[in-house]
Length: 551
Image 1 (cartoon, one colour):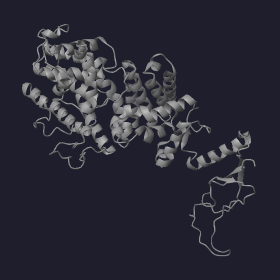
Image 2 (cartoon, one colour; image 1 turned 120 degrees about the vertical axis):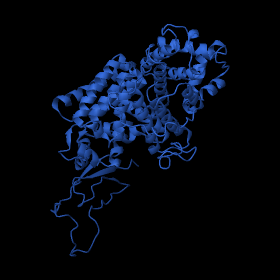
Image 3 (spheres, one colour; image 1 turned 30 degrees about the vertical axis):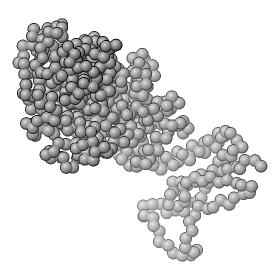
Image 4 (cartoon, helix red, strand yellow; image 1 turned 90 degrees about the vertical axis):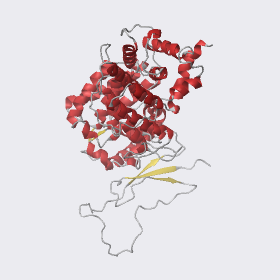
């Protein structure tokens, strides 16, 4: 007996949902014909009077029933051209029910009003397209197999490196928000593909002009066309694409290109109504802030956006730190209010990784926003709260500057050194970048300059470590060197070589008296320390410095 023939029935009146069932149906014929049920509903006997449930504005004219049959029997391996056209017409007909003619202004780009009309379930359906092929060309660009692979890798793997806090909370912003947006914006899907390719190739594909650079150029070309035509200039997709390209350029080591894109982003934001106009789009807002801080933190320069979040821990500043080591530092050099507030807020944010209360006892928000149960999975709300704390600290630090020249006051030089250290610390706990990103070179040079201006009597930058004079305990300086080493772990530079040599000198038994890795972690953990993050980096640092001398 041959295979059972099948038949798919499509309704040609699918746009009148009140009149008939618009769904497609698959019928199988097992050794005999089958009676196809009609689309009408059972109801009152013929002749009964039933009040219409249709609104006055809805068309009430009777519609003739039409169906189209497409043979998908197992006898044939291929679908003929006419059947393929019938399937595509059916898909497009269903799509037109949800896409008004005035809402779609270019292929794959929808107006802002229409974005709010799409339900969450309809957005997530687009995610299935990245797992295979796109037979109906519904994507905003012509998709090729390697693009599907890159997007799928980005959704399942790469996103964890860019949303570390949300990963702990079990929330994937790429799958829930960004990927549906990409399937409605041709420029943004190009930038995502380029981002995934750059991550896999360790940014080599951006530097050598291969596929990642091709997609970035395509995204930039689309954005330039929008700017020339003054079409969708202030859309969410346009803002996101510019921020994404700025992030990629900075990660590839092109700081000048990052500055150009950030200046362009500023101009587009002015047309949008300013950064405050995105307060209802927290993920978009965070994307722009991260693009700004990505380069500002590394270069220790003023950010392009003003501090969006005020510090929450300005009151009370006089309470002691949880860190005993930082209390000692404060007693030696009386830290100002800005640095003390930043340290308090960082200590509050650190509890996110420990499972205890997010806020210290006695603060105003401790009862409503705390992570109370220990060893429980944090919620997305708590992850957003910690990101708020860290972002406000980072903007405060990069927006503050102290004189650090040799002729400046010793307290001002000490404050500048502490500011650079706290910037490095935020970069270690919020390490949301590719391991191969060229980040750390500029902040490393800044660290070296401020340290030597503070510890060298003559203020010369070529002084040997043996001639340095520390005003704080040596463990504090080792902790500072460790933070810089963690940021510069994956890049090669002369500053990194200098740093490892200096750490080896001062961590040896002759100076700090540190004999093994456990003692190193114990001595450094008296300052700001998150074991889940910093223990692994301390093992790498020990094996490449003091530990390597004993082999």
